[in-house]
Image (cartoon, one colour):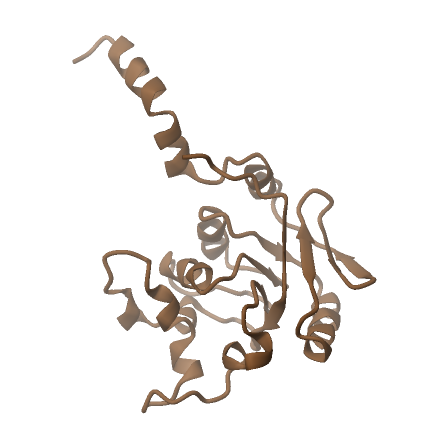
Length: 198
């Protein structure tokens, strides 16, 4: 298994409206009764996408114009609330590979980095301008470049931020701690055998 370095993410985008979107809104608690994360995409934003009868209510994620989007746009304090790692997993399983928001809850940010999904921060004005551009042209390609810490789309670009430790982990392929352990299993066993205890 080889861990992939993530230098940039490109794709079409969709804006998910609302500030302080918590993890229970991202993936309602009843969807957490799962053995694996494989089917979590089904519950993504379920309670704001569907009514009590399970009928779509017109959420942006169900707008056919944004089908296949891999970059999520959001407002401030995205991923607040409980620390459930199912929240970033459900977003990732739905095909998203990066999130641009004004700010993120710390645990959500860490869980996202741990699955190789960059979460970067931009200003409210820059995200609004990008959202308007995406609304005007849903096929607009958006690129998040972690090397130069910029988002670019069309002829426009704006600066982004993220903690240096997360950026370094992503661009040097050190973001998957379990993957690193598995890749170095032989070295771990060798070290264990050299220790003076049984």
